[in-house]
Length: 270
Ligand SMILES: [Zn+2]
Image (tube, protein in one colour):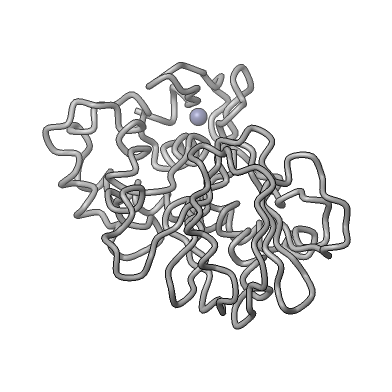
């Protein structure tokens, strides 16, 4: 599943091909995504792209009339290619650009979305309830400490709640909790101020490192046959159940927490 670092890598990959260019035409081959693609996205035709932003895992293609809100869902990807290239199965949407290239939205499982936010309208409900960006200064120790008070919920579930902070997916939650030495199942309210501070630091570190690694595959991303550039990562605990901890040699444990696979070291995390 594309996580925040992959989405940010995608944003950086498509941005130079879109900004200050005109979208000549939008072609919708299959508009049955997670939600139907609305006819209002036709407002993109003839518009100049002013910027390509990101909010959580939503990509935002901005023109003066509004914003296309794009989510890659479980299996989606975007790529820049030549309009003469054969359409692949599951290429559902195509934006023709005046540079002579096109942007194609590919999504085999169709859990992604392509929606429209008109300028001046109230913020789309998908975006309205999102917490702060994890890499911004708005996500800080003070905020996390406040958000954890009186909350019995497991800390891992709390940091994966997009109303608290956006974009901390399952892999990054497990990895940042390991680096902070905090047991994923620990009740949020039991975290100390110091632990909250450490956890904020490791969440930022894990995400930033993934984005940096993703950046090295940008060239491949643009030229490849649609592989959005998932990067090999050196994971400490995620997916390593039964293997030994790289810090202490204890056996990494896997448990299900909030219906998600969770990995931790019983020795390093308390
Ligand atoms: Zn360990």
